[in-house]
Length: 184
Image (tube, rainbow, N blue to C red):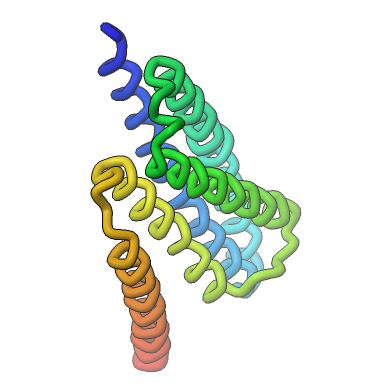
């Protein structure tokens, strides 16, 4: 147990860098999608640069961080296996499995954009980008509050957060459309 705090610290550091990648990668997707609508040569220049940035973020920061966060989490569970008998940990593991599904879908989107295959609108990706925020809220609350959490309030809070994020996206879209119209 003498290494517990070091392992937990490394786990948290890699969770933070994993989420940093999950927050920024879809933002690069949005820029890529919007760059694809520009005229030449700006389109080619931007797409090339955004692919490089995206590839570096995904393969140098996001994937290694996901793997290392998971390895340190498993190490913590080996040190304290009793956690696996607690409902908060089982639910947290469920959210982490869903987070990995989100990560893998983001990876699929990444690969498509690397091949210049654009299947999603920038608005869809803006909404998609908020998925990582929802996972972060759920996982952090489970890790900190543990079994004392009131599940009704957590579900209502999550639904409220989703509603707030959707409203924010709509308002941003409206503001952006107005800003572009004012520029013309």
